[in-house]
Image (tube, rainbow, N blue to C red; front, side, top):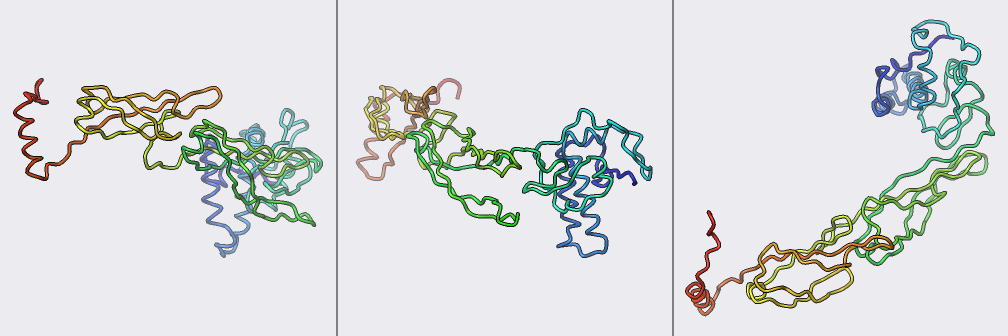
Length: 317
């Protein structure tokens, strides 16, 4: 049995990172996949790529593979020494390796045991071993109102399920997701057992990462809700009480006299509040000047210019 240099097979250096190995595998797998590459030898090359990736993407298997170092040279006969695999266990979940269904004798001798197929890839070892299924990551878009009040959502996803005879089939599945009050963007909801099926063990979990849909009025900063509020010059100058929108409905906001554009006012507890954390709503004022479209309006502005000795450009401007 001849040694196979898996790094050369994937075109990677021995110190390549896991992301580099994954990228190399995907690039080569697309290039030599039998469905797209009809050249003689493409299928065999595809299998070799899958075999190399099955070892190098797995930290335990890669560590064992690297253990022999310079003893593995191209063309060298190889027989594993007794107890070579002490300290290594291959009992976890493995990623799927397309085309990895027909590995070499070298691979089977190196990693031992019987080969069998599960949903998430090819495994080696005892058929009765137990492994949890793969966790799945996904994103779910919700509104700010969903977070403010708490809500529920029905989602539909495709799940792989076993059929009679051992075949795997993909079927749509609906899940009811509870959105807790005050959940913020980037947090995750864990749905236990809704990931990939395990092998003689529990299913993996589904993790839903929260993202917020764009809102027509508000923006969000962690738990705080931000609103830009236009006000008239007289409301800003004299002070006023104005109804402003919040996620919980309109509330009265007191504008103090002499307010200027950019002034920020806080509505306490009107942000995204959970059981243990609170957020506020911040209202930033912007003064809007009405247009002078009639003679009376223009005369009023002219009168203001005579009454007020105000120059906003003083102070070095």
